Amino acid sequence: MVEHRVRLSGKDVRVTLSPAAQSYLSTSEPVCAELELYFSCLIRKRVRFTSGCTDPSAVAVRPGLCVRFHPVMSQRCEVAETDGAPPLTDFPIKRPEAYVPKWLRVDYREGAWHGEFGFI
Image 1: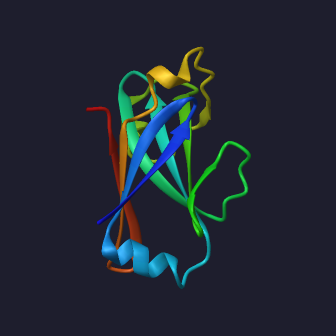
Image 2 (image 1 turned 120 degrees about the vertical axis):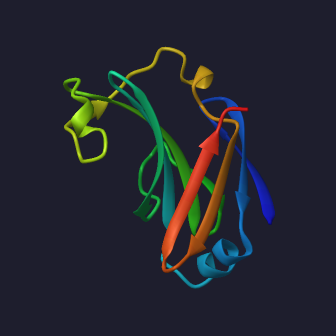
């Protein structure tokens, strides 16, 4: 495992890359790990991987990998929509540093990126 540190919204985040992720980043297109915190009638956290590092809020971790914190909220509260693609909008948080996670783990296995983040 290789560990990096970045600052998101003024808070330090520890980013750990598996050996497979390290290896794949050396040969793949750049990717952005988006730490999505979803506010609705419940809270969900998810890491989404998108091509490229073009978002201005993204922070470089190492060549080929950037991260960004992206709080979102649903436009309406329907529990049945939490697994699908509910209509989302950005969620402007007054103190985003209070919600930025402490760590992110990134792996690449079975032909896909995988990530998880946490607050403890």
